Image 1 (cartoon, helix red, strand yellow):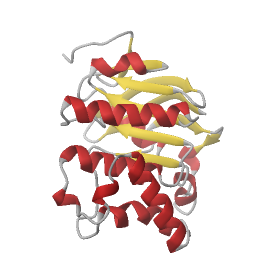
Image 2 (tube, helix red, strand yellow; image 1 turned 90 degrees about the horizontal axis):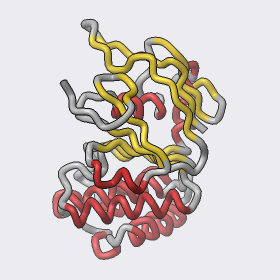
Image 3 (cartoon, helix red, strand yellow; image 1 turned 135 degrees about the horizontal axis):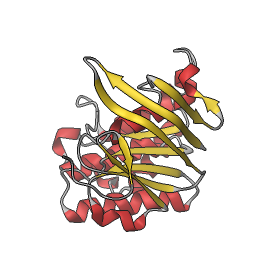
Image 4 (cartoon, helix red, strand yellow; image 1 turned 90 degrees about the vertical axis):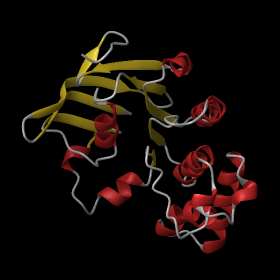
Length: 222
């Protein structure tokens, strides 16, 4: 489903975020990108979502070279991706239900369909009692679960999660990971960046990174 071919990414002034990265990920896998902060995990996720583009190399999703997508094609490409960022990016002036409905409304769904699907997604995240709450009234763990509900409301083929358990206590972190595993069990491809070794045992595969390069195992940043 996803293939990186000798991908490198450089930011000015001469900062190398990724260097000659190559791997492939099959449909339905649960893959962890593991490594310390600054290893390049977030950059890889942003490339898969076509938020960042490589300096060199190719990124293919469903055999399509997404480095060649123009701006008009990007919204259609991203409809099949559920993106979970460290910054939940919830709209503070809208209720949790409104936040989760938004991707459906943008994609052209009716208000009633968006309401039903958003309510179902929030129920899966055990947030049925928070539908009318605003983001700042929720705990960090609840906000993260709301962000996951928003990411899966469109039933994406692919979920990209950037450190979804960062800053969460162990109970909330486990709940978030259990939810992602459930989506993978239903056939959704999940790619998760993490610096928490505890969760790597759940992976189909682990891609280790260190200082922008592929590594053979967990390494500490130098």
